[in-house]
Amino acid sequence: MKNKKNNIKNDKKCIALIGFMATGKSTIGPLLAQELGYDFIDTDAMVEAEMGMEIADIFAQLGEDSFRDAEHEALKKAVNREKTVLSTGGGIILFKRNRQLLAEQAFVVSLSAQPETIYGRVKNDDTRPLLRCEDPLLRIRQMLAERQVYYDNCDFSISTETWTAEACCQKIKEAYKKG
Image (cartoon, rainbow, N blue to C red; front, side, top):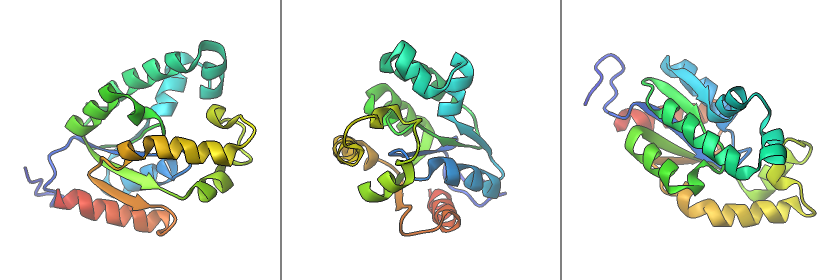
C-alpha cells in the first residue's frame, strides 16, 4: 500500500517505539510524530490516566501484574489508531500478547543504549520501581539481557547513543517510508 501524499509504502497503522527504559522513546516519539504530522501516544501516560495514579504507585499499591494488565489494555487501544506514534513502556514486550499486537498493527522501532548510558540517564530518577535495588546498574544489565531477544525482533532498530534525537527521527522516517 502506498500513501502518495507522504510517499510512504508502509501499510502499518502506526509506529511503535520499543526499548529499555531511558533509551529515548518519550523524547523521540513526540518529535517523530510532529515531523510526520501524526498523533503521539505514550502508553505509560495512558495507564496513569486510566488508573489515576503514577506507575511507581501502581507497582507499590497494586503490583506489577495490575500494571501489566492495564498496559496491555492501553496498547490495544493505541495500536488501532492510524497515523500515530506510540511510545511504549520498556517491559511491554515481555508478554506475547503485546508482541503479537505490535507485530500485526505497528511498524516497530527498537531504540537502544548501553547499560552505563541508561544508568546515567536514570540514576537520579526515583520513579523507576524496577531499579529500586542495591545495584541498579547490575539490574539494568540483567533486564537488558532478558529482554534483548524481544527488542531485536523489530522492523527497525537504532542506537540513541550514536545519533541525536533529530537524527534518529530522520532515520526512522526513512525506514518507515521504505516499508
